[in-house]
Amino acid sequence: MFDGRFRVRSLWTLLLLPLLAVTGCESMGPGTVTRDRFDYAGAVGESWKTQMLLNLVKIRYGDIPVFMDVGNVVAGYSLQRTLSTTGSFNTFNQGAPFQAITGALGPTASVTYNDSPTITYTPLQGERFARSIMGSIPPQSVMNVLQAGFPVDVVFRLAVQSVNGIDNRRVAGGISREHVRPANPQFYVLIEQLQRIQNSGDIGVRVGPKGDSLTLVFRRSHSAAVRQAVRNVTNILNIDPEAKEFTIVFGAVPSNNKEIAMVTRSIFEVLLDIASTIAVPETHVTERRVGSTPEGDLGPLGTIAPLIKITSSSEKPGDPFVAIPYHGHWFSIDDRDPASKNLFSFILLLFTFVETGSKDIVPVLSIPTTR
Image (cartoon, rainbow, N blue to C red; front, side, top):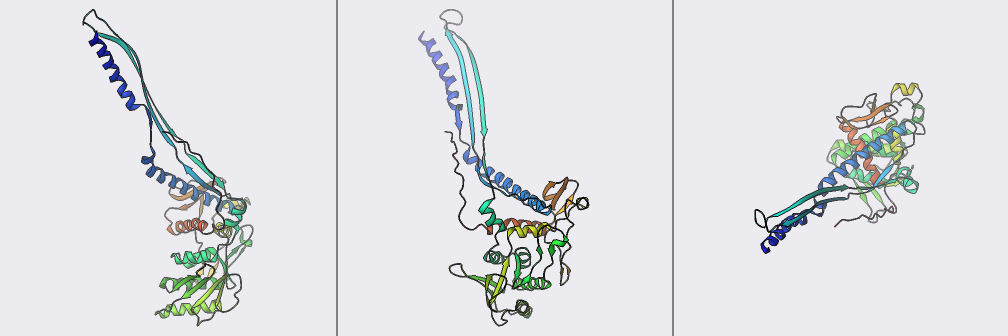
């Protein structure tokens, strides 16, 4: 009899040990970090691109642009595995074999997996919208971009409205030919000469110790071509040709010949200028859904090409860098157009340069944890 009871207890022990091993919750945290960071970064980046292109197209059509930030992304996972067993056992002192064990066993297994991300969206509006979209880009941010190596001809065409009274192209109100004022031809000569100096590395920027002053410095160059380019710049801007340092201020007119007055654009003006170059379907122009695309300015070497090429088609493009549907057509940037891709990415980066002032209040999230 004792031997039979021992067999029953041993059998129950063998059945319960696997249950203890497989029942409970398992942490999935460390193994998901690399995958989640890659996946969410890619998804947020793609949404940022499509949102920007959609807003450019909406501006082109006189529609209202809407900017929605992804405030927080919190991924939560849990994996629960359960195995249960029900049964009954009996021993018999008689019969063959002696003290045999009989009974019934009914196992049940289940696996529960939960993926519950929490994503917070914040619309850009109110004071933050006015500061980020409608406020002028600080001149120091423009100079910092140049110091980082971005070409001056692109940066000035995109972010600067005038330098010492020499105007860049301006798009006002609705986008059509009558709403576009061409740039002063000298503006294109100016940025071409500045680009030559930048390529030589003989131009730099100095910021005051408290960040309250900005100075443009022309280094003494051994190249005759660069020295001539510097003289051309000083002549165009009507500044002291003997000076090598010039204070940069925000404004339309300088107060002396050692000062460079710069009026920078707002992000909205940047978007308005870029949107004006989007190639729209002729049927939409005929139907008066949108104005015709303005012609390019005339520069020293002929017509100035747009900084970016955004095209439209009736079918979804096969290999786009970014593409969005709007009014029954597809608008896209070709993935084989590196200049347009770089310019588009630069526009996205401009948003980070205009985030000034107090920090936004970030929503506090309570994330449940599973032990």
